[in-house]
Length: 345
Image (cartoon, rainbow, N blue to C red; front, top):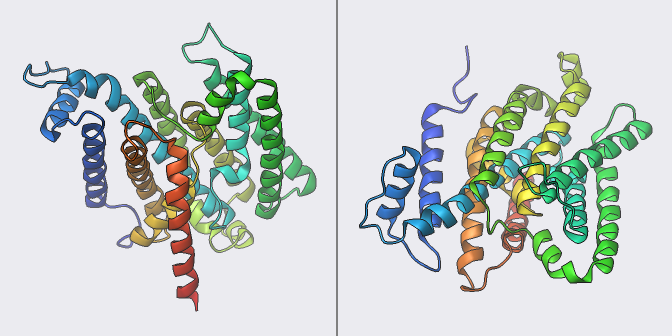
C-alpha cells in the first residue's frame, strides 16, 4: 500500500493549478494597458473553446495577440527550468545544482549568439535559425561534457560532471565575448537576449515549449523513484537495483533538450531552476514524486510574477526578465541557505 503523502494528491494538483491560473490572469490583465480580470477570463475561456468574444470587451487584441502568448511562454519556460533544477539537484545531490550546472545553458546561448551575430537562418524550417542553433549547441555541449567526464571518470561521478560543466561554461563565455567583438552592430541585441527576454513570444513558440515539456517532462517524472534512491547514495542505489549510469544519462539528455528549447526562445534566465525547487521543497517535502510535479507549478508561478515585475516596474521601460530573476533569486537563495544552515545546527 502507498503511504499517505508518498505521491502528489489530486487536491494538491487542484490547489497549485488554481494558483497558477490566478497568477496567469493577473499577469495578462496588468500592464501598460490594464484590462479587467473578468474580461481577461472571458477572452481566455472563449479562445480555448472557440467561442465568439463579446463586443463589449474593449481590447481583446491586447489579451489574445500580445499578452496571452507571452505569459503562456513564460509559464512554460518557468515550469521547464524549475523541473530541470529539481531533477538536477536530486541527481547530483547538490543544492547548488540546476540545469546550467551542466554547461548546457551556456552551450545553447553560444549557438543562439552565433545565429544572431552572423545572421544564420533556416528557411526550410518553421522556426528561426536561433532556435535550431541553440538546440543543436545544447546537444553538442552535452556530448562534449559527457565525453570529457567519461574519459576522466568512467563512473560519471557528480563531482566530475559539475567540475567539467563549470570549466566548459567559462570557456563558452570567453568565446561569446570574442564573437561579440567581431559583431559590434549586434551587441545590443545579443546582450539583451543573453539577459533573458520573452517579449514578442508567439503561440508557435508556446506550442514548441508545450510539446517539449510534455515529452521531456514525462521522462523526468518517470525517474522520480530513482531520484529518491539517489538520496541514499549512488552505491546504495545500485545495490537496490537502480541502473545508476542509465538514469544519469536519461536525465542529463532530457534536461539538456528541455533547457536547449527554453534558451532558444527566452534567452538565458538564471536562478529559476536553482531557487524554485528549494521553495517548493519546504512546502511538499523532499520526495521527488511530490517535489517534481510541484516544481512545475512553482516555476511557472515564479517566472510569471518575475515577468510581471519586469514589464511594470519601470513602465514603459521593460527590464530583461533574467535581471529580475537574478535579483530576486539571489536574495531568496541567501535566505534559504541561511535557514538551511541554521536548521542543521
